[in-house]
Image (tube, rainbow, N blue to C red; front, top):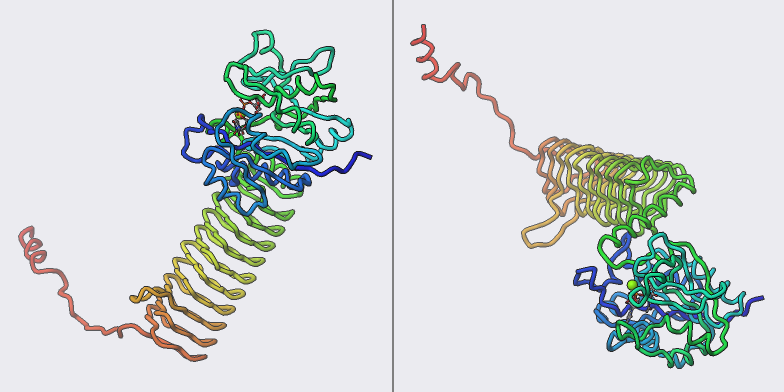
Length: 467
Ligand code: UD1
Ligand code: MG
């Protein structure tokens, strides 16, 4: 049995990220909707880290503010003197057990990856392990130097000879090390290299010289994927989306065109649901089974039940759509909107803070805000709740069950309409309407016969001239 030592994770995130050319600290750039540093922290937590220390430097105030509720400790690195100096800034004196060191800009890493490295490290009973990977284009990564199969050193690309640069096995920047070994050996690292920095990679040769057991753990190239430029950021985002789509398909979700479907990792979709091209599902969104999300639908932090249809071009934000509802095409559901079962909201309908009852319909061109609509209500085309008053306050419209609202009606809130009431088309309702009543509030039509001449006088004259 491998020993169940305490596990701590140090995340290096103090670097400037110059190549991002962005005022935002690099590690806060979102990959598929989540700051990349958060993905790394989640992976570390998922792997069972009891403690996570983030080394911050550039943009530290912002990084600290963003990570405040993640249950991590931020340690300041005063000057960016290299990766070994960064690790030292994590206050090694009180660390115990095993330590994983990783970079804050490797957003593809997952809990299983870290768990596998730690368990391999424990199985090998190593003192220090470096996670390596074979890359087609090893680029600027540090190269793994082996002698008779045994890793003996890491050489940075900038310090490497042409022959060394040909090596395709690289340092992914992930290490597992015993806290006591790290604490002792890191002190011996010097900055005699082309960049004048303290390289953490020098730990390998130093620990070997101290007769430590130093191992390399081979991992897939995805672990090595870091983000240094906007282009790499977009590539990482594409990879995370693609991974999510793949997993959804494995779980029985039908995706018409995986390449043009965007689903963030946190989203849940039930089996039997269908995702059309161009839909974008974000945040805490949850979708049940057998629901259909048509092209170009944007859904953020919303719940959608079973057998619902969200038709093309709709936009949902913090809304709740119960089972068998039909939304859109081109509907907008704003926060705190709840559509109860089997209700329908059609094209160019906007709802904000609305309880919309079971089997009710608002099929076209409607705005409902701060409203409670009962069951089985028909909201005619062009209906508006006038919720915002001259005093700059919002007021509520309440409409009971089985109400029929004729087209082009306005409700000047606060106003209440009872069950089974009928609102005549074109009404501006300013007073409460009791149950079963008919309310008509519009100018009366009058008809004056023979009001208009058959044709205007000039036209008659023109006609005569031509004759
Ligand atoms: C480092 C490794 C290299 C490896 C690569 C993997 C060293 C010397 N080299 O190179 O072997 O292949 O990672 O991506 O370690 N950082 C600080 N403080 C500092 C310097 C860096 O916090 O003073 C942080 C950065 O924010 C970054 C990480 O450490 O998250 C790596 O630093 P970076 O300068 O990008 O190292 P690489 O040149 O990529
Ligand atoms: Mg880097």
